Image 1 (cartoon, rainbow, N blue to C red):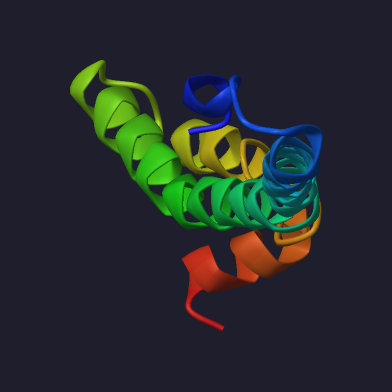
Image 2: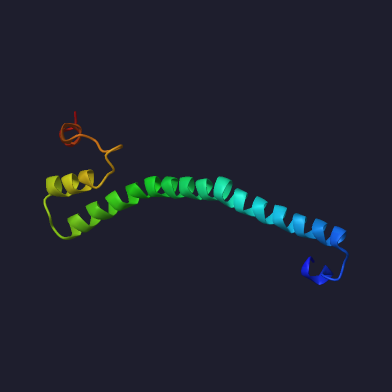
Length: 98
């Protein structure tokens, strides 16, 4: 709209240029202040939710390859992020049914 009005007087053209600059600034501000943090948080949630599928895949593949179950479970345990990773004794007690 601004470039199509280049033949207008400076007062009108100044308002159009100002509106274009405000729109550009607002778009950049929203992209960096809202869209990027939201996208990063959604990626973090997806990565956390996807860990269970990675662990299940490791258990299935290990079982199909004929590895011993304690080795499979330990390999799956160490693939979990450290925030959610159970200790070795917790897993061992779970295997023993305690």
